[in-house]
Amino acid sequence: MRHVLITGGGSGIGREAARAFLAAGMAVTIVGRDEERLRAARGELDPAGARLACRACDVGRAADTEALAAWLIETGRRVDVLVNCAGLFLAAPMLKAGEEQAADMWQVHVMGPWRLLRACAAPGLRGSGGLSVVNVLSVTALKPYPACGFYGATKAALKSLMETARAELRDKGVRISNIYPGATETPIWGGRDMDHGRMMDAADVAAAIVACAADTPRSLVEDLVLRPAGGDL
Image 1 (spheres, rainbow, N blue to C red):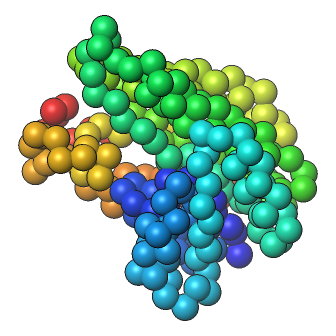
Image 2 (cartoon, rainbow, N blue to C red):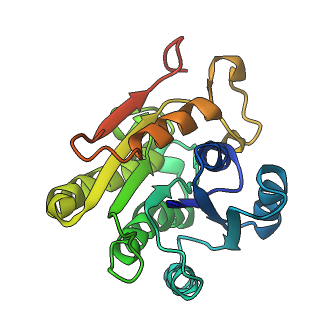
């Protein structure tokens, strides 16, 4: 049975991705900073705990990702699919953005996925059939959106980093897909005054994640852009 590791798996797109992978017959581990939220997700998605595990982990902290990798090895959970979905959102004009929040986004959006790629691609943790990585980026990595400067910059940095990793690792059994969702109905919006009726459903993005992670040896979805049917908000 293939095993999927999902960061930011306690809510939003990550939680829906866990639901979709479970429906596809896979084993799943969800991680995130809020342990209570993770347990609630596990209780909803897999009450018996047969195929869904959870563990608290702040991917923005190197010590947490190292501890997660050690736990996965100790419990025999090799990683066939890594979904980097954890994210922070800062909406602020460029000249009013806080340095601490911007630094936090860099750690979560760039350093965390890089650390986990490095850990999961290692022989002791990588699945026997190789490793598929799906990075949940954002359309803000592709074009500028007002008040999303640092958010988009960190997503663009991850885009560049993972494109380079794809070129370096494609002949080593590591497949890397980047997904760029537009506005999606998730808790990350935090009650902001937006037209939520126009946003995409997180389950639709989750379906795309599962499709990108499919074991198709002769093809790879390298980049996939998803936008609300009515256009950008």
